Image (tube, rainbow, N blue to C red; front, side, top):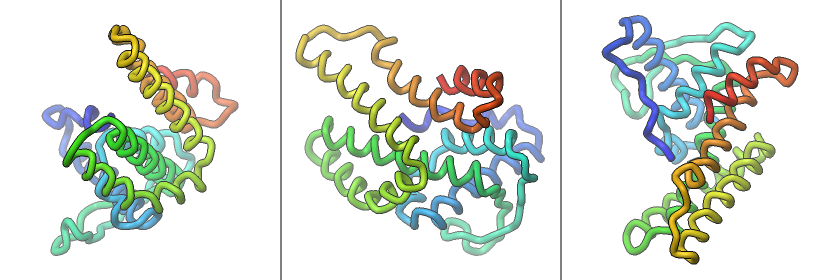
Length: 199
């Protein structure tokens, strides 16, 4: 579910890479401030893309400051934050990671299952807060993850592996639904483009 989307840094200009890093750090700071230190462990480049898309659509100008953090305590680094898109991306990061850990608890065995269970417990409080902040997104995530689990169960019980498209559709549809929420309801063209990009 995570770790597929990264910038092709060889093609970025110096200022573009600096901006990209500042957005990534901004998402990390937002995760810590809104959902606690354990939430920063689930930070991924995938949701940094969502935060970047949100920034491109935000009415307010992005704010960039230099800050220290636990990972970089000795040197200040550029950090971009714009409340709305970063809060949304951080909440989705927590909710998706909690869903992934719950899926791992159901699917894995042995040590991996124990690790997933420990992670799920550590993230439980943050996931509840994120669900309170964005209840519709939380409901969409739960519905699509159940749909994904249903596809997996049908493959296990019927002994016949479904098509690749059937396996990928719940995750793709979820990302499409979450991405389109970056644009206001009245901007149908932008919402359609975001939906397609998310899918």
